[in-house]
Image (cartoon, rainbow, N blue to C red):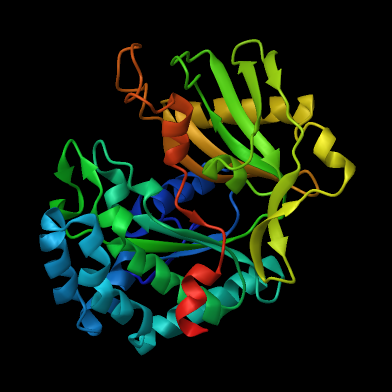
Length: 365
């Protein structure tokens, strides 16, 4: 029997839809195969995660925690999982897995032509595909991680994130979701985009389910301000058929998420140049994004939520693609739970981003 690979590249022929990449990264592999401009990267597969857990003797403790999850109060979780989380962060990697990760990052450096290539380290869990679940919003992503030792540290942080408060307490229809199975975790390692502007777009109107529209929210810099909700985004609505821009809502943006060389991490910083008073997207870019949204929807055969970035030289990159789940499986009626806006519900599926590398590095400082 052939051993499942510990590393799988996004552009590998076997990658699209491969369960070893989890929900998020398998979708990105599909986008890569479809010819979309996805930043290069590789997944440390669910097989690698399971090998690590078994080789280090942590699999049994993880099973105990999963069984206990439905019965733990929120304030009990950290104490109950402390030993497991510490083990995931500190137990030696199996030598063959350590070597594979280091070799793959070196290949990414060569492919990008950048030493210590800045990458996003993205959780991509098998449980993201559960019916009715939005685990993607519970898992972690770490941005602008440079150097293979830091990458490995953040891979461990993503694995440990499977046993954090938000994940273990997450419920679907009143039932604890973690207890539903022994879910594995792929961790995607993907080149960062030096984003001039970024955001999300929906191939329907998330306010009313109108499939004749493309709606996008955007900001200057990295898209975390849109996803996390701490920057008021510009909004654009485009007619899918005529490609007419029907509505623009622009704002003066005074802060932006970007990499701070002094701090060595992504942070929210003041915008000091004239861009803060200008729209982050011009009409040509809005229409280019709308055409891309239509292309992706045709390829996927259903409405989609798409995260994107535009680089400093104007290059458009696709960062995430997910099926739209709010309207696609419902009648066009009341949309969300009381007190939650439809846009916020959709954006929550893109959340889970740790913009501070310190979150994973704290144990080693």
